[in-house]
Amino acid sequence: MQERLDRFISGQVAGISRAEAQKLIRRGAVSVGKEVCRRPERKISPDTDEITLNGERIGYKKYLYIMLNKPAGVVCSTRDGLSETVLALLPPDLRRRGLFPAGRLDKDTVGFVLITDDGALAHRLLSPKRHVDKKYCVRLRDPIDPGAAEKFSAGMELDGEKLLPAGLEITGERECYITLREGRYHQIKRMFGALGNEVTYLKRTEFAGIPLDPSLSEGQARELSPREEQALKKEDNSSLSYFFPSN
Ligand code: URA
Image 1 (cartoon, rainbow, N blue to C red):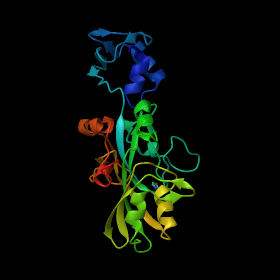
Image 2 (image 1 turned 30 degrees about the vertical axis):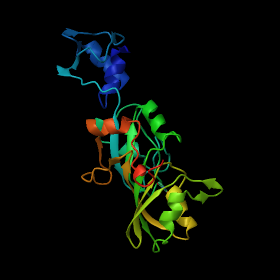
Image 3 (image 1 turned 90 degrees about the vertical axis):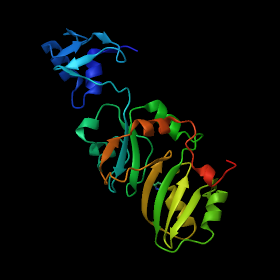
Image 4 (image 1 turned 120 degrees about the vertical axis):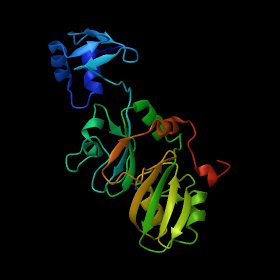
């Protein structure tokens, strides 16, 4: 697919607006192949044309896939008048037009948020039909109900709606991991609330089978590795078959 040269540059190079790209092109800072091109409207083929800016090749990435370790206090949206959004946390080299968080964590939940500009993939991952696994570490106010694993795996009913089976691994009297294959509003808080308990800490540790990189501290982000990107695009990235072999 062809794209205008000015649009390509502002889309691929962090911090360069379309107007700035046009100025750079007119000034002769940009080459297509070996030739300087001064026409911002020139159509290029991003996959095959070599574009250089001030003598440096611009690497082409159609989409970005970013893992962010979200801290508490920021919201998963592209805009919010009151609170900081996850996009504001991205380092300058990972910022570009069109990025958005694929799915939401509550403001006080921490951990793995996927940020991308690949709308089609995000749509597939978030589709209720797709059942992408999300794993969370949960700390609770009170000891875990001994029947919780059974109730969650049977698929609880919450406010009249039947939930999909969820996997529970108990790691302490008040601590566990829970794996969901859907993402309803405040789901984990409401699941434990229905058992008379209260979530005091919630961290997403895995998304679509990809673990949160333990070297990322809260607020830090990095691009997915090629292997992680492949895992994200795999049709079936469920680990819940471990709990529910027949699903
Ligand atoms: N469940 C919740 O209650 N909150 C989240 O942020 C994610 C899952």
